[in-house]
Image (cartoon, rainbow, N blue to C red; front, side, top):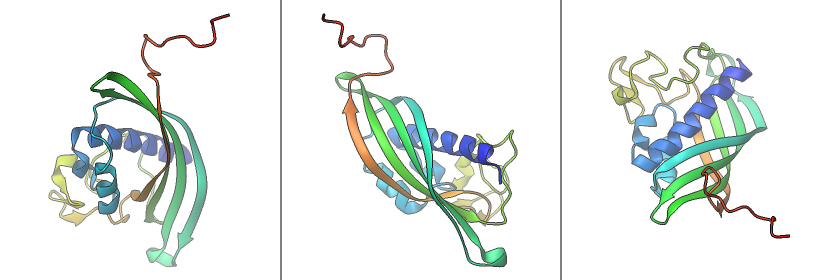
Length: 178
């Protein structure tokens, strides 16, 4: 297990999940997101995402359940994030505090540094378009089980706060009226 590679993977997956959610393409991430997570994320507004900035990642729990080759590792993380969306009124921002629970077989090795940020079939490397409902048509394996890599089993929005635009050049300065 490599903590650095795990965090690289998680940052890439989180950003990609929000980008694809906004485009209605979450099903393409079925190798990494459980069906319940996809369904929950589809309920969020589908406004185009202009930016995802992860400001903090905290580990809030980790466990190994089971024995031997059946042992499953789980990690609970909280992510503090600023999203910039293109709404009907122009750019808008939101602060999110999310908690994700990721699971995989305890004996699965981390992806190499070159592949940590690449989202493809975790077993054979086929493109995401080959993975339908967690099953890869190239290697004929169910890849959303945690047998080949991390899968988000639960995603929970703990806090959502709309904010004025943060990642644009036209933000009114505050506190300079003296």
